Amino acid sequence: GENVEQHPSTLSVQEGDSAVIKCTYSDSASNYFPWYKQELGKGPQLIIDIRSNVGEKKDQRIAVTLNKTAKHFSLHITETQPEDSAVYFCAASTGGSTLGRLYFGRGTQLTVWP
Amino acid sequence: DTEVTQTPKHLVMGMTNKKSLKCEQHMGHRAMYWYKQKAKKPPELMFVYSYEKLSINESVPSRFSPECPNSSLLNLHLHALQPEDSALYLCASSPRLAGGSGANVLTFGAGSRLTVL
Image (cartoon, rainbow over all chains, first blue to last red):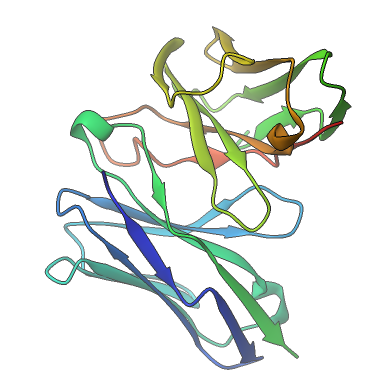
C-alpha cells in the first residue's frame, strides 16, 4: 500500500518567519494530497489540499506544491503567527482498491515563538 | 451546518462496561469514518461506511462494533475494551467515497477521548 514519509517531526520558528514541511509518497497512483492542522484537544482540520493535475495551490499565507515526478509535496506557511502552532499532517489517497483510505504522514509539531 | 459533532467528549469506562460513541453530521455526506488516534501519532482508519453500508473494516477487534442507523448518524459500540484501547476516537465524513471534485475531502469531528481502566 501507500507509504507517506513526513519531515521534520518538529519545527520551531520565530514569528514572522516561514515554515516548510515536506512529504514523500510511494504510490504513483495517488492523486489527492490534503494537509491537516490539529490543535491540542481538537480534531484534524483541513487547511489546504491539492490534486495531481495541479502543481501549486495558494490560500493566503499557506501554499502547497506537488512534484509528481519526484513523488513529493510540501506545505509552505509564510509570515508565521503563534496561532499557527499545532501538529500538521500530510496525507495521500488514491482510488481503486484503496478507495476511502487516507494515508497519513507521522506529523510535524510546529511551534511559532513570539 | 459544516460540522461533525461527536459525543461524549470524554468517556471513562471499565473493561467490563458497554458504552457507545456517537457522531452526527448534517452536511448531506454519504461516507462516514471512524479513526483511532494515539498521542503524538496520526489517525488510524478503523471503519468506513458508504451510503449506510460498511465499506471498510481495517481488521478491527470485534469489541468495537460500528453502526450507521441513517445517513447522518454513526455509532461506535464498545464492549470489553482493554486499557490499550484508550485513545482519541475521531469521526469524519466526506461527500462520498469516489467520483467528482471534493468527493473524498474529509471533515473531522473534535473526537471522543476514551480512557479504559
